[in-house]
Image 1 (cartoon, one colour):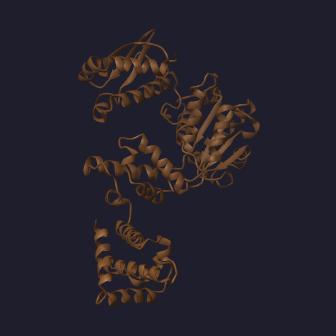
Image 2 (cartoon, one colour):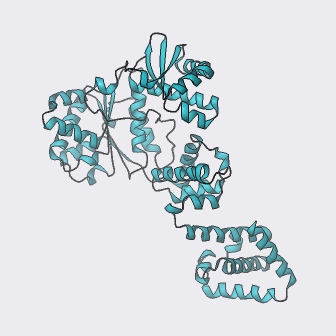
Image 3 (cartoon, one colour):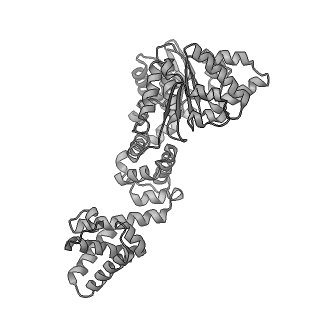
Amino acid sequence: MAETISELNHTWAKVLGILETAIDDRHFFDSFLRDSAIHSIDGNNMTISVNSSLAVTILTAKYHNAISEAVKEVIGQSYKIKIENADNLKTVVKTEAENIKYFKYSTVNPSLSFDNFVTGSCNLEAKQAAILIAQNPGARDYNPLFIYSDSGLGKTHLLSAIYNHINNSASGKKALYVSGTDFLEEYMLGATGEIGMNQLSNYIVSHDLLLVDDVQMISYKEKTTDFLFQIFTKMYNHGKQVVITSDKHPSELKGFDERLKSRFASGLTISIASPDVATCVSILKSKINAGPIELSAFEPDVLEFIGQKFSKNIRNIDEALHKLVYYTTQFKPTKHIDMETTLEALGPLLDVRAEKQKLSEQKIINVVSDYYSLTPLQVIGSSRQGQIALARHIAMYLIRTMLDVPFTKIGLTFGGKDHSTVMNGVEKVEKELKTNTKMQEAITELKKRLKS
């Protein structure tokens, strides 16, 4: 088994996934196992580092067999497991940063893969292209692969998936992932004489794939972009793959030489659009399934709401979910997450008053529709049929009296009706309530349902 840090971390992440399910105690797992790691492998012996002497005692006494079985399930062979306090261990396995003096701080999340990249119409083509590159790097028709989009839409995930696929495969090929900022910093070190530019160039070109994330970060850096052009040319001429991401199409990049922009656009250029609501909900579900709260705890309309409100940026979905999870586990614990709780939790991210009002308006329409065995579309529509018109007027009346919504805004909610139409409908209900006992009973029952 190869003993690079990324491979050991990738293996241990899988082991932890099994243990987290088996132990089924999130607080225990977080305290004693979350930051554990494979420290070293020597023949048939594996040393696991943990964060305290207490963790050593408890895990050795109660979970040694479970850890051994999980390791065997992931790797396919048995190891003699020894659990040690990380503070007492000396580094045995050389880290990749020690073996490599370049791009020490360029890291890739080993858990990001094609399997957990949630796909929709907005990003399907980009994912397919990334898979094609990972399986057949260097093909001239797809070299370079240039992916562009706004921030937070999955470009880094796809680069990481390519990297993890290549470096964990048996192909013998090597991928190098760097951000635009990393590339700039490494060039600046070389330019000041701390490392040789030829050595840096040779190191980069020794890889089979170069993955450059957010290339726009080196814009207007003439010498750095010239160095990238040289690297690009060498790799292309040797049949090696280049994959680049940016926030703009190559032709729209500022601060780059035209010949470099031409090279960027000479292969396969693909954009990622903002996800639709359905894709956002799918992304949200996948993130919930990987977290501490069961998906069943979330009301469906909560997922739909977050998908609608935070669809422009996947990082916004992350932020909203993290706030909601924190609020419902630490601040106001609950096992049932409804819209009211969601609006409370996400208050800093939303115009809560407007959202609550909108929610309440729709709730009134839904409750009135159900009471009269109609659909919400019938109630907000234009039919003048007696029962439908009555339900519409009652819904308008309740929105007006219970929420104090202006007549003009109520009209917009009901398909753009004039404010005078809404006013007449509300007045009809008010007049009927003075003498019509059935109307009085209906309003009483509807208010009871709305408050329940």
